[in-house]
Length: 231
Image (cartoon, rainbow, N blue to C red):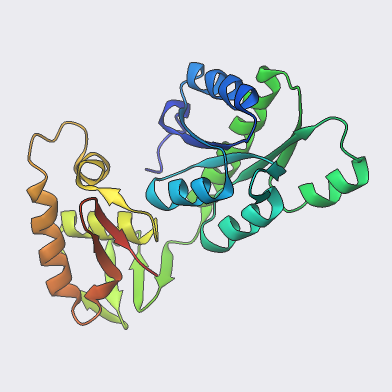
């Protein structure tokens, strides 16, 4: 959705080993209308961001099973998700600055929730504006998407997709390696007012795969959950 930025539609993952800080931060963000996931470790964080669409990650530099910069590098290599580091104010300033360069922003705890919200809004708006100004074309695997013309090419051969098939493909292909449930796809692609059933998604996936053959394997079924575009 390239429309106006709406804060209430944004999802944030908090990665913080200290329960009190994690819970407090989650309350701040939830009260402001964000959808919040919580994680205590790098391992849990990776599972969450590979399973759910995440718009921004707020993480501590020090985690129970590793360090924030390593997790940040792992995430940035796979998905373009903004990251804000959190750390205690007694950390050495030179180390802090060097580490923070790998993230989009940093904040020291304890922090004013108003400042945290302002930092998050600034980064999400920046990411949204960059996406809005990006090219009308996207190449991914053997596919080329023309967002303006609503066209999909496979190995430079145009595929004759219906409007809904195109919307479904675009949503999956622009959120690579993220698993979407059928209900999430119904909401994102068909819209909240759609009264159909989840098998509608299965039917469209089947038709989409037939049209994309022999490159249909990029759209993978995640048994018991839904679908993802694997790259």
